[in-house]
Amino acid sequence: MSVNVEPIAPDAQDFVAALEAEQLPIDDLSESGRLFFRFTQNGTPAGFGGLEALGEHVLFRSIVVFPQFRGQGIGHLITESLLEHAASLGAKDAYLLTTSAADFFAAIGFKQIRRDEVPLEILSTRQASSLCPSTAAFLTRPVSNQAALLHASTKETVQ
Ligand SMILES: CC(C)(COP(=O)(O)OP(=O)(O)OC[C@H]1O[C@@H](n2cnc3c(N)ncnc32)[C@H](O)[C@@H]1OP(=O)(O)O)[C@@H](O)C(=O)NCCC(=O)NCCS
View 1: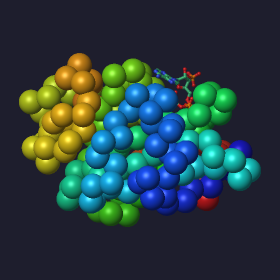
View 2 (view 1 turned 180 degrees about the vertical axis):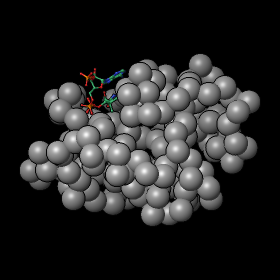
View 3 (view 1 turned 90 degrees about the vertical axis):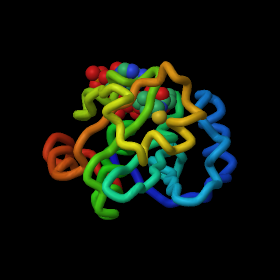
């Protein structure tokens, strides 16, 4: 499977609709410091992912795969691609919040942490401070070497 990635504007219609369909935050999409990507399979949009770079830390967000594309490894590819992008920006640790997919991210090496273990830069994001429910779990994993590890364990590629 070959999946292509392209940067998108925060107000791309299909992106916003996909987030709304999964009740993921959209209120802060257009604020500065966010990068978003569309992932396509054979030219058809299959999912999206985004990040907020905060120095050594990076917040992954807006990760969604269209229902008809789920279960094919695209969610993993999106996360891999975000890790590669985070590494290229010099980030050391990736964080994310989720209410429903903690086990999905745990399978990619993310570990759940307590709110009081989360760096202030991440806690200060709008996702963490107001947009995500207080019941959302925080997960983290190192950025370094992740790309190599994932490449070794999958034949799939993001181009
Ligand atoms: C979570 C999500 C991105 C996974 O995408 P995907 O393309 O189906 O994931 P993959 O195909 O790479 O991985 C599938 C594996 O993850 C597991 N998985 C998928 N979604 C899961 C979830 N919400 N919770 C736990 N495990 C999940 C599957 O059971 C499967 O496990 P297996 O490999 O042992 O069979 C997708 O279900 C989605 O868009 N969910 C709604 C939005 C969301 O919750 N985003 C995350 C918060 S930002």
